[in-house]
Length: 561
Image (cartoon, rainbow, N blue to C red; front, side, top):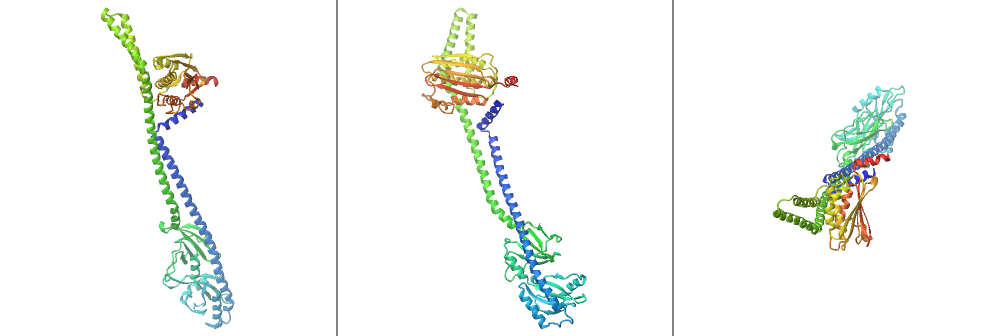
């Protein structure tokens, strides 16, 4: 399990280092989508909070205004009820009795929101009044209300239809109380003309936004007073609006008005106590949307800018990763060419020997004719040359990693000639191969390149000659270990931890610093590892750990299970 996790992590790291466009672009797109969803969620939450806050504010204000309206009409009702004993006398009072009209004028003076009080008899005539007849129920207009009192003997209080001094100009809201004879028959009604400007001024002092509204309705849905927070022109009529279709059977409620989006309002209503009146508070949704957009626009603009920046960074990252990948490929080729160049002298010597054998063979054939022994020696020389050329081509080939089950000892046997050429004259190369080693994962071409790099480095560390020993051992369930030890100058402790870093080199004649980095990268990509130990003046040992092949790992796991 530990090996599989390590191998997966190495593969994932290799994909990132390889600079996969699809992976980077998908990651960038996912990040941008996450940011957009986060911003959308925040903005939706902000709108929900605005909407809920508007609902709460309108409901609270409707409740408070309903209480204020209830107290106002209670005061009117109590005033009218207090006049009943004075007006219900036997015999009936004469029309326009000075004492009675003076009393009515006193009551009007006591109430700021009442314009006039008048008395209407059962025939519909105005018999008593507090003063001017402006804004009171005219003789003919009183009859429908008297009919309502006759039809319902229990009806004591009634709010009438608004009165207009001119079309669209609200003058008064009539409020009526029944007058009865000692026998209980209808004797007329006393009427108070409530001043609408009192409510309008009060409503406009409340901040409900640019197009907020406060409306007063009767419980049958007919509107008594409509007011908005917009201050009208001094000579403009008070605005009236159509009554909304709220549930009149409910004491309170909240609804969204129908119509065009630009005219929609969030309306909260509340009944004014036991009176047939409903106060409705409307908050314009366009104002809420404007408040939301003031926050949303900068957020959306910032999100778009962040998305554009993120995408440009992703494109830049992909380009840089591609450049690094190409640079890495070029560096690997440079390292291989460097190793090949260092082998040139030794390889050219072997080719001269092969050519000498061929030349001698041809001379013997010319002198003595065909001879089996001579021809066999020539064929062996050609085979050695062909093998040497094949090894050189395999080493220099730039191919993709193809890890497969291999025998480390078999790979060493096939590479022996090349390694001895790489070691050169004056370097003794020896092997100590473990027996019955299990198969392990490796790429033959990369294996050859790694061993060539280690042997060439060992040769450079021993300019006066020395010994290179290659050892293979089983590491149990961990895999197979291959170590390359030299008797060279060693590596200083300060440099030892950096030997696998790209472009780090201690070669006096100069070097790319990529050979050991290539070895380390190869081992990590197949799920293995590379380590180094060294002692100055004694030598250096590089150890490569090759992971077991899949079938070997299964066999190793059975005893443990």
